[in-house]
Image (cartoon, rainbow, N blue to C red; front, side, top):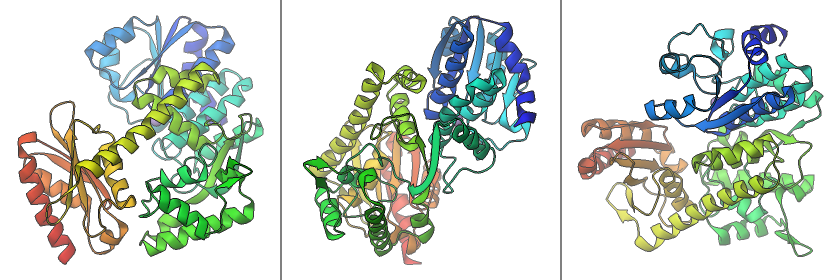
Length: 459
Ligand SMILES: [Mn+2]
């Protein structure tokens, strides 16, 4: 840590020697945490700043950013945009963990340039935290935001943080703002009643539980886990250790029966991170819930709401953020209802869902996968769903079940080959993949995809 605090010094000097900053941060959970972290640190120094979450940096965006302040501070963003930043801004510093494109003589604090793996062991918020700590040891409490940011970037996906994130975790624990423990790592431990907690988790998809309220109730009943107690809904965190273990083993048995691979089931349990100072059962108590809340803000172009929440608002902005999450869940539910009523077509080797203009292209993949859970479609073939994206392309998302993967299906390969055959692009994992193809070529794409899938499944 000491070595890195020294390497952050050019950015620290940049902050100390200037005022009237424009913080520009990425719009996802990690970026919002990085921006909020710097904003809190600047507040403590009595510096003036604006803060702008952003998705990309084209010429219109840069003009807007230019006008936001005298000295620009990029957070979780900027290393990949150095040429355009150099060309348009006079005074700036970059704090980032993404890959670097180009060079600059201005302060540039990037994970990869200081010997850290920015993909796995430190997030943008983590880099911002090092800067904050170098500014003042009193900023150690801000480590909580670095934890939320790293979880948002899924740097705990192996089951726990690795590398430098563990040092940040130690700081957060020492400051008394985070506790880590081993538990079920699903969204909503604190913030969703048990039934919603299980049925809205879509990774892994569990047919008869995912998106299936009745099925989830039956599953909980058969495991003798209470859904309500004293007229109140039971949350996962309300369960005794004994009931938690019972729920976990019931989930594992259920997953195995549905061919979910062992490593996947194992990864459901791991380290969870709780913010000690936050209220129980709020969306900001658990780092995963918190990052999901922030991602909902970013995705709905309400990054500034997320920043307020990350900076500490638990009032109006917190309420707005909660509403965005509810809206997200409503959109999932509506999408499933739409698929149920309008129907899914059986095209031979796959199911097809035409999202039309009803389902957002960013949600259609999740909804397609949930159709297995809701048993709208059988588990015998993959599903592909499409809608038109902003550029007028047909955007396809494919989902499968573990049962099909075990039989030889690889959606990523099928999507890549089928898309290439019609002049599009595709790829992804065995169980979830996507492709973007010219809209007028969509039928040709489906034909080609079906042919590839039938070969994969007959091998
Ligand atoms: Mn990031």
